[in-house]
Length: 282
Length: 282
Image (cartoon, rainbow over all chains, first blue to last red; front, side, top):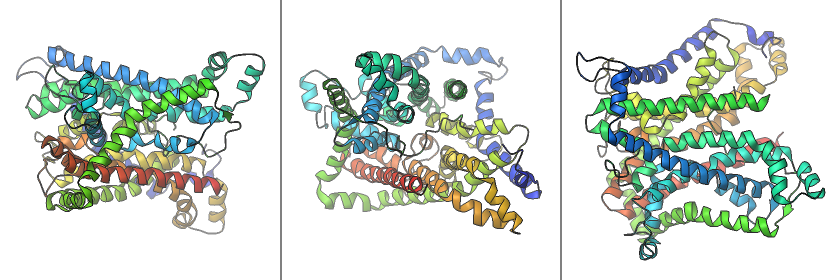
């Protein structure tokens, strides 16, 4: 890119100063702290004990830790599933159909990402808790409890990651246009056939990308889930809540071990995302 | 460069008009209905419940909650910290984007990935990551727990990618011709930057900064472990909401939450308008 642009290639002292500054800034802010987490994760359990992967795995095999990761996985799975179906559906509606309030809806679906997680949790409590919620009483008499249960935590997770699939799919749908879809339906394909044979293949990578982003976000959700969950050991304690509880209870090694797993998951998501981008471009 | 976890800023749509919009068919009408019901249950009704709870006590109660000395101190600290972080990010984010686009050196690809890490990490893990280096057992002897500098550092960490990722694509697309023309007419590199490059970056810097500001205002997870939550000293808005909820003061929590919601909505609408204006200008 810069080969032909000689004017930009000149390297003065300013270039080197800026480069050094950026490297130092990122090192102090991000890289060094991350490194420190890694080294604490693999630190020995007690003085003189062996260090490395053994004690790390040992901490993770604690039943409360496996429960927390299981619950996180459950919440993330359902939230991502719901958001994918809803996201693809609403993206098609927003880009392919004309109805009153279309533009308003397209702005509204973007709100969940910008709302503070605490506000998300509070909103769900104020709407659905059996004590104070608007619909809490009605739901309670129907035998449905949302706040303090797994469905509530799934809702909180789905709320915060709602726009991620939509944000990826909508631009692709707009770009491919409707020509191929119109051709398919004029040749006698029904709606489902058109979607499966024409639309889905072209938005495939955008959907996968949105799913990976949603998954990463869902696995790491903390604030919203914390407020709707009972948050006690083996009772609504997700991986992120476990990290907070263990750290504040001076069980730092376990907190660091759980955090390290989540760091690995996020780095994995980054790698997958960059691979998808490459695949998509080729 | 686009291998990024950062979703594009602003609502998920392009400004170009879609080529064809269909009328709703019975099937898609049902789909729209189902989508709207779910969206209302998950997002709209809970958010309405927050506004309802804040408004329940009337304007006086709402105003009293926000002007209560302790709450007001928390709000002021939140706004000041977020504003400070935004200014720092506007400058450093632009510098980082500049180095990532214009400079070429060994390891630049790694830096590009490092930028995304704060976004990919769960917020509670981000807090723990910073505490591992700058916490009570800091190997460098800095303890940021329960200090305003700690809050500032955490906000810098979680908002790092916003300006970088909005400025980067604009910088890549920037035409070399105008810069060469300016240089050939005798402009110094500083003048070229100030008069030619900076003006075209301003919309992107503004967009990234406002996203970062909104995020900093509403940040929760990374501050839970770092902010000591001392009233008047290190208490921020989102943690104040948590304290209200734990103290069973739903109205107080809702009042502060409405304020955070407002900031989020103003940011989204503002960015929407900004992106339309930039798109219209060509």
